[in-house]
Length: 331
Image (cartoon, rainbow, N blue to C red; front, side, top):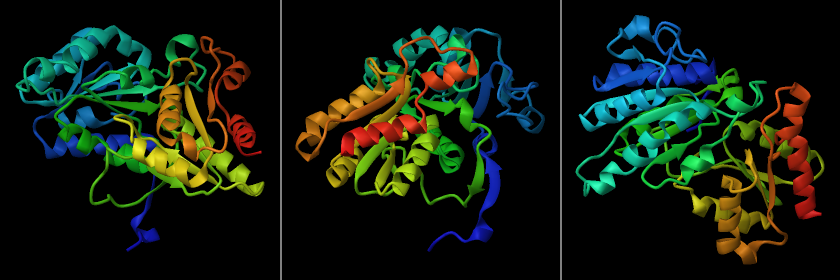
């Protein structure tokens, strides 16, 4: 049965994330939020605004400015049976905790022979497009998707922002959630929760027959815009939202390519060694004979992200770039 309009309500990506946090803290005494400025300030991007007043400082904890320390504390709390949600302000700061994530969170279950699960959720803002210059505009999801032992997810829609946190907290392994900064103000209608939220499969956001446009996170709105433009030109584009970057859903990718016989992979990260390279390689390995043209990739320019708005826009994948890549594939 379809969702009626009366069941939908207007909200934003930021508010959907906040509702997910509120529900998680309220429903499980083991869950708490910790990170820089998540309490009195309400979060650097306003996601946790009001939660300190609602749940108190035991459940919403401001931390010192030491990512290695508070991510390490989150790992310890998870080992002790808690369900911590650690917020790292932006993805570049996660590099200060990379030793904790790579050498502890991702490896302890394996190195303990299955005795020490680490049910930790780490949230962080990623991506460019907000004039925050080179130090605060990275898209490093592909780095983390390289690491065995963790799950990496990138909610791109209101529904995923609202409903992916609960299954992430239920996962016995560490889960990293990448929230693209340009999505926080995105608004729309949010329907009632689905029976379950799938963290294992990509989602086809728009069906099509002529070409597969494969992307994730903050690039999804641009790719949907490109699909609209292509439709006006008579090209039917299928849009695949990867959603989970580790483990990748190769079956949905392969099924889409088998249907359209053309593919464009859109990734805001740098082209060299990117997640787009991994997706392209998997298509070449498993779907080569389904292709009628080489796989196209649309990625960011290989330079530190500029501050100036026009230069930043030029460095990032845009809808026009996706349309041009689609034409190269199908024409």
